[in-house]
Length: 585
Image (cartoon, rainbow, N blue to C red; front, side, top):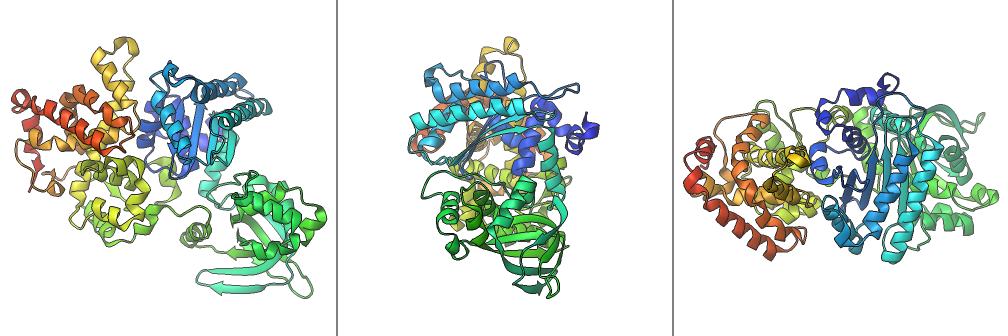
């Protein structure tokens, strides 16, 4: 099956996803679509799959981007004409449980995810709800119809529960072989539309710069709608996102675009920011041939304008008279192309970490990590797209490393709820990445968080009938959103007990040996074993998603006291062995 699909061929080679079994494809799709650097950390938070998951294999809530994704996965072991539609209709069940059921009746497996989703809704932090059905078969109309029914159900629930919600769109998406291949192709080549196209742009001017040239001219809105009708979302292959849709709201930019095209087409040029379009080649118009000729086309900035125009009720005459300023940019340098995409995408912010990629601290950390065996730390610099697709086994993801530092140093709320502020706020950045931070210390913190994620995964794989009551209690804790971050904070608070010596400056702690990230994770495993029975003491801090400092402080104190009681029994065993390998100087 995968021999016919480049995306599935690559997925089959992803050995790091095999431990997630059927959910591996679901995570692969998330990684392709969202450009996720650390898919294991996302899986530790978002996966809910199990016997009582109420058809919710994954619930991902990202308040930074304003997205909530509810997903169901299916993996066929033999070729079929399409995926089973009943699996798509399962999302109706998921919607009913997440939005319609009473909180007390929700199974414990998905209750924390459901609560986090509703908390984000009440805070007006979600702008788009997405229903995904991910599978490895051809897509079908029957499946899409089932998904559309689930989408209507979400809208009905939101209208009832949150009539003033900031949700702008509800997306029902079948992510089958075709979509996976398109996302994969987009990650390889920024321009999927490769036809030769004549653009009705006779009046304009040519500009040239370092490794690029561009022709700037007004184009009719009607031409844009024709392009969208012909190429659909392939037209936006180089863009960070496709057209998001529009709602009847004055605050919604897409709706305002439509209203201007329908009511004031002669003002459209003045009101609209215009487009940036990547092309493979261009030939400016001449007196003898007054049209712009391009080969290849991808709208980098202007997907919302194009989609809104295509879905408007404007007449042909109105669309013909409305003009949009467009820059057609030709560039062969891949790094420059990437920067063009980043800097032109004004409606989607460049990732906050990008602003720190040239920071002197990140530069120093990258050089220090070069001395740590089998480690690859980018420090905010994005690698090639193949890094996301193939996942280098030695990668120390920037975002996860920052979360680990924040959690270790007593900032669990920042680590879980406000990761963007680590990079965007000078004050928070200075707290998480102070001048004295070193790569060896960062590895110490990062490996603790990864060891905790590993412990959670291993617990989830123990069959329910074989789990002890203690393991069930630990798994209950780990199902709480933000639990891995809080446990990393709690473990760091107990290090004086574990090491048996005072720690005067926690930023100077690191493993004595220059070990690999994999070996560092292994060092933490024996330490976590005696800590896990006490995680129930931390649950009270989770009721506010780590936002209540008083509850967090109280929970950490109770946890620390219980760990202190283990010192007489374990001080000469695993604690001593761990301490021998740690430097506090």
